[in-house]
Every structure is written in C-alpha cells, then in structure tokens.
Amino acid sequence: NAGVTQTPKFQVLKTGQSMTLQCAQDMNHEYMSWYRQDPGMGLRLIHYSVGAGITDQGEVPNGYNVSRSTTEDFPLRLLSAAPSQTSVYFCASSWDRTTNAGELFFGEGSRLTVL
Amino acid sequence: SQELEQSPQSLIVQEGKNLTINCTSSKTLYGLYWYKQKYGEGLIFLMMLQKGGEEKSHEKITAKLDEKKQQSSLHITASQPSHAGIYLCGADIRGGDMRFGAGTRLTVKP
Image 1 (cartoon, each protein chain N blue to C red):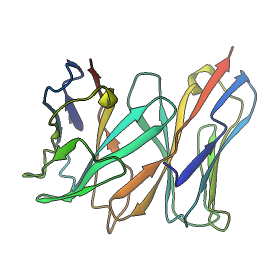
Image 2: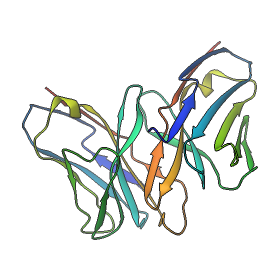
Image 3: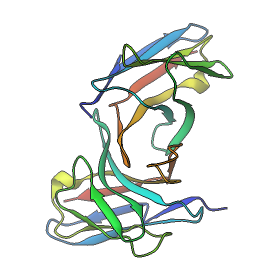
C-alpha cells in the first residue's frame, strides 16, 4: 500500500519557470489538500479538494493552481515560480472531511527551491 | 495559522523529564489533531480529540481537549530522545479547511 505519493522529492527552479508537483493516493480518499511548510510558520493550507471536480482555496492560494480530475490525483501547479515559493510542500488526503473528519495522511514532502 | 497558537515555540528538556505543549484556538474546537514531524521528514499522526474533556494516551504521550477554553494540551511523561521533533496541532476550521499551528520544536538532551 503506497499511501500518499509525491513527486518530485526535490526540485530547483529559476524565477518565472513553471512546474507541477504531483500527488497521488491509493486509499480511495475523497479529500486531498496541499500545504506548504516554512520555518516558524508551520503548515499553511494552499488548496484543497473534497472530491473529484471540486477544489477550493485555503490560506495561501496565490501563485498556485490545482485541479482534481480523478479521485486519485491532485496536482499542484506553479505557473510562474517566485523565490517566495521556496518551501517544502506536503500533500495530504483523508476520507470525506465534511461528514467524517479523521486523520490526514501525509506524503513525504517535496522540497522546492526557486532561484 | 492565526487560528491556532502553539506554545512554547521550542522546548529543550533533559531526558526523563516531563513536558507539556499547548494549542489554543481562536475559534470553537470541533476536533483537534496532534501530529509529530521528525526533522526533514513527513508527519506522523498521534491522536485525534473530538469531545470536550476527552483525553487520549499513546505510550507516554497524553493529549487532552478543553472545549470551553478552546485549548488542547499534549503531555509527554519521562521524555526520551525518540520524542524529539516538531509537534503540530491541527483543527478543522470548516468542512475541508484544516489548519495547523506553527509547531513546537522539542529537543531532548540525553
């Protein structure tokens, strides 16, 4: 059982480049989300999805796009990377949070550096 | 997250000592989660508390939820080096929007 899989684990970008962080889960979870973790600031929610075809903004959505075409996948797109987006990104999933809140299962993280 | 404040921000204790980490919410808590993160790694789920007055324990870690005070505490008894890491509390703000505190960095000196 793979759980939540994030790729790539490490990435270096130049300012203005675009890229996609991939997230896949094999637990048939309805809910998926993306967080960024910066020193002293804990985890901040970027975007989340309560099911295929449904996405919503979290605390820090600017500069990021998401889509949820399947239950399994929830990619995070940076359209024009900026140094302020240097961070560690975590993808998480769980069963339906609106009716049955439970623990979030986290991926191992993707470390992104924007030069 | 401004919704969840954790204290202290960092903690250094001698092995064998007890310690407490607090998590205070600016809003009513309907569910509170505790996670542990080892440096440079992912997050490990510790416990979930859903009812006021609820208390859960796992090995030497006990968590309590005080809904009236909108606060949760995490207590570690007889700390060990394996307890070192970052402890984060999280809560559902609204359906799907789950926020976390800034974390408490714990160092246990042997």
